[in-house]
Length: 81
Image 1 (tube, rainbow, N blue to C red):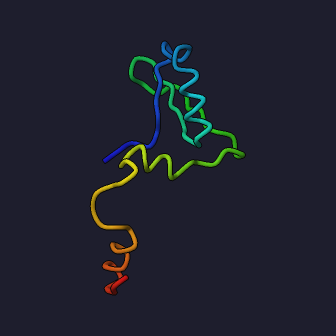
Image 2: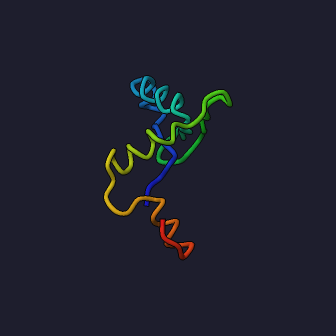
């Protein structure tokens, strides 16, 4: 399992700001934490859309192992691709 929401400690925000901006530009939400508690959420503007391909590659890599999604969907429908 993985978490889609990025987080940053309020103490680290000045140092992490360039990274936080990259996350927002990619359409990610960022939770700001203080003493391990979420105190704020920064969301990208409506103009920014999530980069789903980049997000998937960051999680599973460019060449993930296993069956292609189309094959899994076909199996779920009881048919062959």
